[in-house]
Length: 448
Image 1 (tube, rainbow, N blue to C red):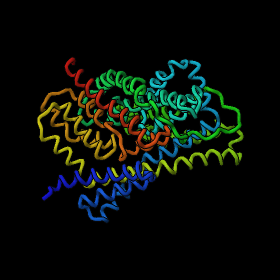
Image 2: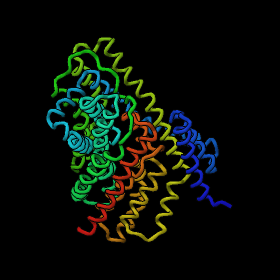
Image 3: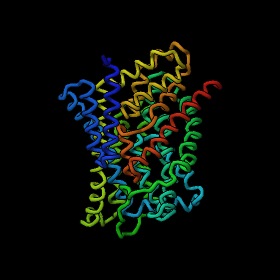
Image 4: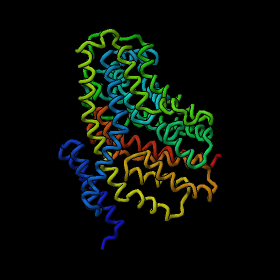
């Protein structure tokens, strides 16, 4: 007789395996494969079909209503930057400033700075159009060498966004863990930066030398031809890119002052949807001037946006469905209980809980919230540094992005990799951030 816990594990593995096979071997769109995987998990786990359907609808709704809006607004802003020539102008300016040899390192640094106040998806949709434009300036788009050159810029950008997502407050995930565990924000930021910089170097420029060999890229969602109009001034283009970053950073940092916490305008400014919507509204007149009312320009901007958004939103929405069914079936709770049964280092325990939830639910934020929820008692009884527990949980929360992570499909679409090559590049990059981050946290625990 199979125990309920074992049945749940088998159901999860079967559903995820089915989704992967349908996508990789069956060549079906991720939207179909992931939905089939979600229903398979729920039914094999013993959930009634109506409950599975409700979980699927909730998962899709949560992702499309949250991340989906950020993605759509980011895609429209990216289309404006691309079609107006602003992204290419910024890329050329950056290459002139850094030179070709230093470009991957400059990309890494820019991604870390831009990604600090943003959720990963927001940073990705803001930064990738510019990185892709810079890569096009460095190499031809159609040969293998050109693909390798593009990836040499793209992978450090993804590493920079990934490490701050996991390790550095005031990024929302680590900040949530800081508050829940009573850690000191200043020390957590200091330790996080000390760990994030070497982690990003290893997971970005260094790892890319090995994982990108032979990877061929399809046209990404930013690859449409630009309009034949004069490029806007470089300073104006930079303002458009940085405006949502500055708004969100102002909102997040401003609320750290007790007198300003919860202030309506700061709360609004820190909301990625509000920041991106206002930036979209400003970008149209600033980038296109009097020609913004031209039917050809409006058609080009929204045609490129919608063509990209449809495939991406369907894929990440279905990934959210699979995640929600796994959570509803109880896999996250099962993994947390299992890890708590063994007497191990509190830092390793926090990391393992976050890894288990990440693999089961696909969401780094869900992994952080769940791990933080069971760790306060462990931190209090063990006397371990709560700042290091925050960082260990953050490192575990990004372990091995796969098909139930909406970010997996977002990266795949933006970069232009196949599903198999997305595992080879992006999933391995995230795993490297997680493992190297934990190793450095453990090493730091012997120093402080």
